[in-house]
Image (cartoon, rainbow, N blue to C red; front, side, top):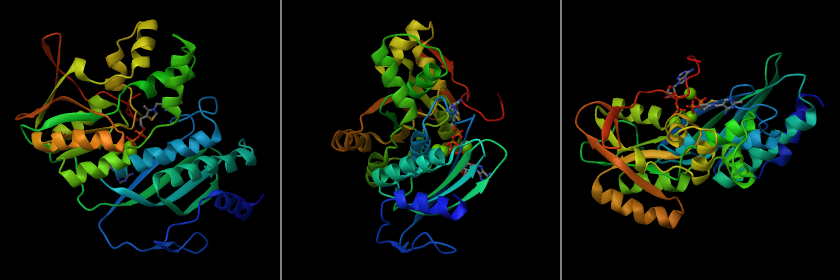
Length: 323
Ligand SMILES: Nc1ncnc2c1ncn2[C@@H]1O[C@H](COP(=O)(O)OP(=O)(O)O)[C@@H](O)[C@H]1O
Ligand SMILES: Cc1ncc(C[n+]2csc(CCOP(=O)(O)OP(=O)(O)O)c2C)c(N)n1
Ligand SMILES: [Mg+2]
Ligand SMILES: [Mg+2]
Ligand SMILES: [Mg+2]
């Protein structure tokens, strides 16, 4: 298969583009109908860093990379609309596996309501990597900078599952088979919180961020950007039940997974009390549970209360250049 046959094989898997795509894949650029404020983001996924051939199948690689990119649109309160996918392929990857990445890309595009409008495919002597650019519509963007003293601090879903699932995939098996399967699935298939992010924007959440590098890291991002202190209760952080079981079995603190693990792609944010009450109601409607874990105060930094003691939570989390 040459480069053009490969692109045809990719495109054949994609759902048809939306009506807002005026010129689809096949020309020098795609042309889309904007007509609103747009959020733009790029996320890369690199073999050996974000996935390995033994941690994910090709469709899982594609789905997960799409979810990670779209999660940043959700964290702005936007609706993903258009996506481009760049792919660098080493000779060691069989063609069928490369094309199978697009099974995941296509499934994700359909699930997230976005059209894949272009991309690029090149050869490389390095690891396989992909870079996904997502553009979304966003009426009222929620940045990291809007948290105000008195706001409620909340997170969606539950945390720690992705990092525990990765530990299992990397060979540290422990706990029941069913819990292990749940955690591995949580790592391979994150769910960007698109509908909840949109509702948070509509109802007036003041800050929002997606959890890619770990809760501790994202909390510090919000505290710094907003010029506030964030205080949270350690035992209110929602931890996936299977994580608690797994962490006990391997002799770790489950909270470590939630705070420093990353890749859960849940949202962490702040909202005034009345807005938070409305978010609770809407969370039930869109099927995304939310939990209040603390509050915003004057000052700086991130502080956790656990067993009656306060401790500063540093920015520690996944960092590409500090390993
Ligand atoms: N190579 C780059 N060139 C320009 N901006 C970048 C680059 N890498 C990261 N950024 C920007 O830095 C900010 C922080 O990046 P990052 O922590 O990766 O965001 P996130 O965790 O939300 O994906 C983002 O606004 C991102 O667009
Ligand atoms: C094989 C493998 N090793 C380690 C990890 C863990 N890991 C890789 S990147 C990352 C952090 C999130 O990725 P990043 O590129 O920093 O996302 P961003 O914050 O830019 O959205 C984590 C926890 C993994 N997913 N797979
Ligand atoms: Mg990054
Ligand atoms: Mg983000
Ligand atoms: Mg990101």
